[in-house]
Image (tube, rainbow, N blue to C red):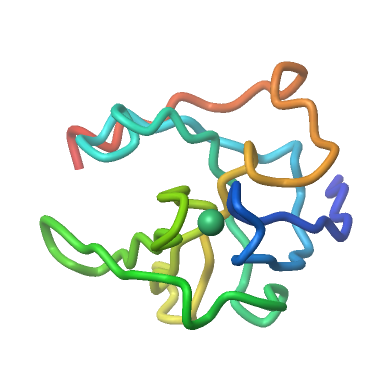
Length: 119
Ligand SMILES: [Zn+2]
């Protein structure tokens, strides 16, 4: 059963804001070199279910390793509130940092520990 709901979220300073339809019963933590340092809890959504409502000009893009995931940071406050990547089926997807969603208590989530370091 999915529990998809619409959430609003964004960076710390408020320049980057978005709305996304997401299912917070499906979250992960990841131990790759990036996520291990940022401590993000992630959920994934189709790009069509994500709408950047402000801050397109406030984002900077960082890629590493295979450069397939676009880690987007607010240039003012440095928060990585979401990223963009192609999903395995070839469609565009977004990775949402659940900690950046408004009124979501990340401490009650039960994220799956994804072994991104070994991929
Ligand atoms: Zn910001």
